[in-house]
Image 1 (cartoon, one colour):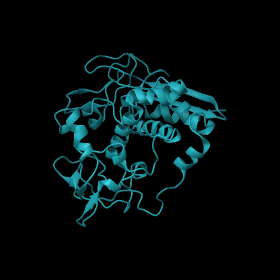
Image 2 (spheres, rainbow, N blue to C red):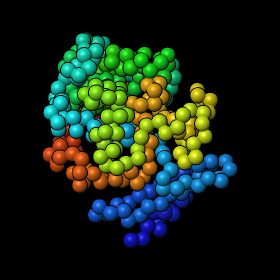
Image 3 (cartoon, rainbow, N blue to C red):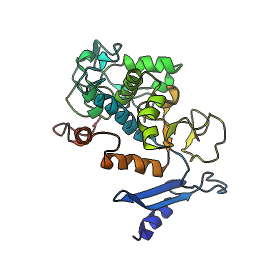
Image 4 (spheres, rainbow, N blue to C red):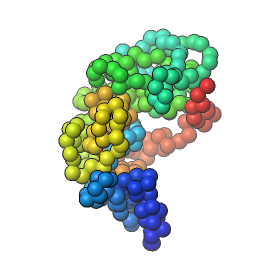
Length: 297
């Protein structure tokens, strides 16, 4: 197989779209292409990216959290149609529908619906969280909370942004709550539960918090210069909400490389971690009748 054209496109992006990149291609279960390009130090360009360089996975973390949750489903510890409050009793009661903070325009809000009303959190199921039609806001300003516990309480007691089942709104908040549930059901912190149930069985080196803040990791790709943290983010989670939650959250925080991500994807084709019927349920269309993207009003 000749991947020269693919490599050329990737090479052209270095220094323009991204300072560093990796690409792994698998075919019939085998790695047929594995390449790393770019630099870990964009200014001096003295340290090159390699196949073991770690990248911030951002929202790909959600897939690992969901997979850990589904191992618990297979063990009969929970059902996707159980109410969230069965595991997180704090997530209960009638709550108002209102706009949420706009992450792209500080000081402004996003309105999902112009209809007033409320949502009973008691009725929200894990399936609602997984298919993003719970009514939860896409985002909350967790970073403005004073500490991780305050941010966790903000998630558990958040308001809603639209009636449950009315549409699909991709929600970090829903996966943060799923992460809390995975931790409680697994009886260990989320990072340890994901290690025990996903990364360790698959032999992956993917993990949370690869380096302490303000250190200079040798083999971790930078993300960007964070204005409010006042430094280039390297080895600490870029996502503000995950950062405020202590660097470990259900929606963001994992670091990995392309080899591990490809192997993780292969596990769904091989059914090496989850049963075939579980994967079929995870990948079937769940809410095709709803709007698939938020259109702010």
